[in-house]
Image (cartoon, rainbow, N blue to C red):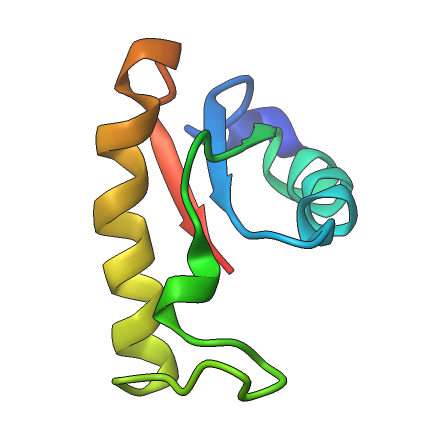
Length: 86
């Protein structure tokens, strides 16, 4: 079933912190066949926190897009092909 997706077996960088990637990765693996790993060196808290200790400067969609644009630059050396921003 999942092998029909173009994502099957591809690597993905997950731009998340505080352990969320441990929850997200198995779901992405089962549903899309992606092999996930945390985005190296990205501090997603600088985009705002759920606890609002650091206020978001933009909405959820814009914030996710900003993270997705930053993470590939940091993960280029790892050869990761997709970025998932959470």
